[in-house]
Image (tube, rainbow over all chains, first blue to last red):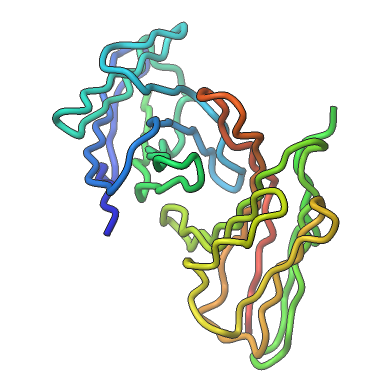
Length: 110
Length: 115
């Protein structure tokens, strides 16, 4: 089966840096995606990794190690609006399916 | 251009009734996905359509669930004889898997409550 693991909940302070980890065990791999989901809203795309290394995009960065089945999302200079759930998803070999983790709820406090 | 749209946005029904949920994907997107998200949970894959290929129904939880996609565009998810455990947000997403970086684009979801 497919297994995507993330911490359930994290709390961080406004202005700080937070790292959200994701480990995966899937039968195939063709990219790892991070999505942000505010309460009551649909997920929106944040980042994509298919090769090992770090992808930086403004305040958000995402890292991938395929050999370890591991990714993290790094959020810098946290803002209150970053309070949301962050979903890790792995796409399978045939570009067909996305397997999602249960999401990490991030609480940003003043 | 317009994003993915879903209707209705909210649906309250009685146990045992049938419901139909509609998804209108982004124009030109050949792939369409249905997911279910229970309160505070991640996304559970239900079904996947890609072009004219046979759909991947491996995520449908029971034979009460079915989906179709007409003309390669609009999709309808039907739940027959609804049960209380069917209460969830049903999300539709579309994509065009022609480039490696292409992601899914989600609709706003249909919130289903079965009483």
